[in-house]
Length: 420
Length: 114
Image (cartoon, helix red, strand yellow):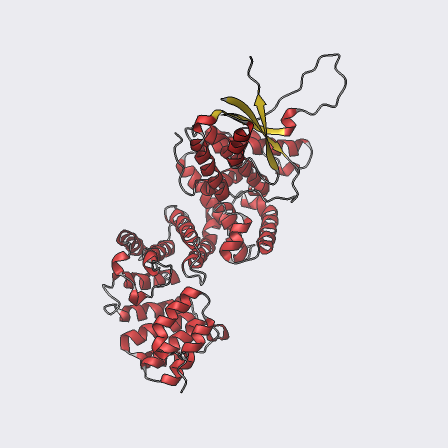
């Protein structure tokens, strides 16, 4: 009988192997490293089912991949395809006996994440590269998950690799200080991956959970490593846990979206909420209050409220004010207006929006119209509410969001066949 | 039961540039291969393996060639037992990874003595 492998074993092993080998031969050889890792995984698929799993599958893969890589780099050196300055001391550097201490591997993986977040790369490319080399997704899988075309993913990866080749010599010597400077970029990439998975308008896709898990994995690595362990990282990890603890309650049995006030709070994952709260407690130090702190604070208030009605809306309003200061966005103001309406009433909520300069992207979104429909409706302005409710529904980006809107805004909507 | 040699062979693909499987797809292939192995446990005489380096040795009087070496044609082998060629082919066809746009399997009866 063969032992079983963890669900994401191959994908995560890809990331670990690429990181370990790049650390040893240099990021400039990323392409050759990825090829060698791909070959080793294919060999595993071919060999392992024919016999028992090797004692340590990870060590087996490392041995096969490094042999392959060394062979290829030696061939290139023999054929003069490598500049002398790019020569690698191949003997010993990639010897299997020198690796596979757990801490080492995590160190390598973290280093690779920082490499992906080079400031020479646009954010979008950082995300694509991280999904490829750290999370082990293929071009097609990345395109699906980030709603990009495969051609666009290819282009971004190609440019990113070219950039890394140019930057390679310094990168190999990247030290702690340079890492620290890149930490905000790494956090931002993890945050974006999480949001893409959690808040995406394509929320019914099954792989959204994978993106959330990858984001948590990266942030968890940061939080437990001296380079990444800062209050911002703790707050980021807290907010991820406090959101994903409630993820399953956001889905109905049929896959629809369940609104916060409709959620069965006993389905929230108490253990993960506890985890989130403990990271939030650890984040409460230092002198910087980041957007992650504010967002984790909001999520924590929701997690701690016994019911929608008993939510401490005053605290949530405060957190939104802090969030607007840390990361100004009209969307945050809109959210604050909703919280103010719950706390003080719909008129006060609308008053927040009166002072807001509405950017065009927000005015075109379903969210803007849904909030206005709800607040105007609660003020008894039936006609205004109806207009906004119809506009919100027309702009709903997915069927499950449209369903949720219909439930929430039903009293304000134009009904089919309502004519006189 | 008769034994059959199954040879995995590369074949020219009609769609060149076939994308390589992603790690997640490889994990799925691994799982499928294990299921297949369970299902046909009784028929699998030798799960074989991939073929590695080798060399064709010739008598000095052999002509100069060139000779195609089997290792250049065959990626891997295994031996199954079945009551007929048709059954052996059915088993091989179900094996994940053997049939793809750029690989096929050749199933050959192994004649037993007598």
